[in-house]
Amino acid sequence: MLSKVKRLLIGRPRKSTALEDEKLNKLKALAILSSDALSSVAYGTEQILLVLITAGFAALWYSIPISIAVLGLLIILILSYRQTIFSYPGGGGAYIVAQDNLGRAPSLIAGGSLLVDYILTVAVSSSAGTDAITSAFPSLHDHRIAIALIMIIFLTIMNLRGVTESASVLAVPIYLFVVSIFVLIISGIIHYLAGGAHAAAPQFGATVSNVSLFLLLKAFSSGCSALTGVEAVSNAIPNFRKPAAKNAATTLMMMGLILGCMFIGISLLAYWYGIRPNPHETVISQIANATFGRGVMYYIIQGVTAMILFLAANTAYSAFPLLAFMLAKDKYMPHMFMVRGDRLGYSNGILFLSIFSALLVIVFGGNTGNLIPLYAVGVFIPFTLSQLGMMIRWIRLKPSGWVVKLAINTIGMLTTLSITLIFIFTKFSQVWMIFIFLPLVLYFFMKINRHYKNTAEQLRIDITKDKPMVKGNTIIIPVAGITRVVMNTISYAKTLSDNVVAVYVGVDDEAIRKMEQKWEEWDVGIRLVVLKSRYRSIINPLRKFIDTVEWKKADEDHITVLIPQFITKHWWENILHNQTSLLMRAYLINYKDVIVTTVPFHLNK
Image 1 (spheres, one colour):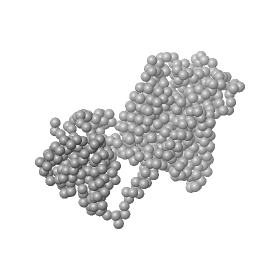
Image 2 (tube, one colour):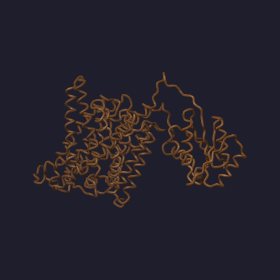
Image 3 (tube, helix red, strand yellow):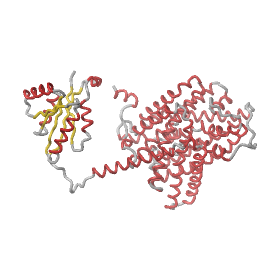
Image 4 (cartoon, rainbow, N blue to C red):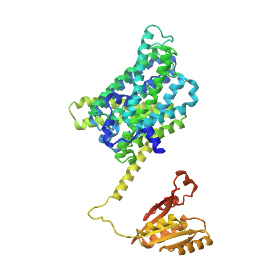
């Protein structure tokens, strides 16, 4: 039944030879890998206005120069990451750049920051999409957690089905959003020029006494949340069709152009229409309402905005598994993240991302707005390390035209470092968690790496010296009575060794007497050892007996415990029986020099 449900949800398994068919062309990649960046149009301007409104309505005109500054930073990042793509065509982005040029600790900081950022991206995007829906349909506000979780489940299933299939389905609403926003911007500009704007815009250039540099920097850093997701293309180069680096660079430039035009367009309309941030209605909703009224076009824009905010999480679903794979390959994350699933995607990474983001949505009650600064810091730290790593690369290698490349990355590094510091100083109350969480992530990376190194060291052999050592085998069979299950186990044990002993643990004298009598009558040619348990425990007397045998025989024999177990025909029938054999196995498996094996006997009815 479970297998049928799995096949229904994610489809039939694909052969490894079909891996090349899972690569993306530029149009599909633009949709899948740019959804996070493009979706930020829906809240980037709003984040700027939320800060400026604290100084009064007159201060909202500052949103225009701040938006232009954010646009300038976007151009720097696009040019910088374009250089990264051609320098590191294997993907990995900031993690690989930092590893190659800055060393282990900075690379792990970059990798850990991005992994956390991708988890936050899914949580924030699903919650932001829910907000867009509840803006249009306020009656759904009480169900926002359920809506967000349903969308996370939907994206999980789509990505488990494979990159190409998910791209084919999800590209439609993403491009529909781009078209709708451009329709909104063009219509809004025409509407404004025709004198259709009813609300008065704040006077441009007006002096506002209570606007400080601190406030402007805080607004700028908030607007920079629109730049999250820019690095995803450089992380996911292996997902592109050949020539992968060239296609990735083209996709990055296309994303930058679309994002820049949409962001500055929404900021201009918000200023011209005198839009104020409203906790019950998004900025996009207010602009669409002012331009089209609450008609069909308004609901189309709200619908596609909700979809893009949900689908913004898909960037994380594309980039997180690849980054987790690279960290696992370097032995900083569990090896399970290197395993491809039935549909050739890194399914364990997809499931891990979904579970943790869903937990965040539940913990924060579907209101993850406070996480936006945190996940913006999470991405600007890798931005800075990536730029610094590229600077060192140009100085070290000095390729043709390296001075211009160095200048681009230097400007990028200084800018992103400044934004990171601004975030930390202006929003410390919202981002302080990263100073606890990141060290914990690095600690786990180091512990995992140390475990893999220790394991490899202990498992490694010298094939010229180390040879298998031939020993005998002492077999212990715990028995609860004389049954076909026990007979089946004894039959198997006799094929392995002549040194077989059965052990019976009794709790009262009468039960022990009957067992000894039956065993003598059965006469199967192996000795029965009877242990009395004063406290009704089976494990403790058995453990002491095994300790004694191990002490006497370990030098000359392997000690093997064969556990008889019957297997019911239906899974639910297991509940009707005690689980002594499972408990026994779970306990004995920790013995260093004892081999524990279950011998199954299958029931037919």
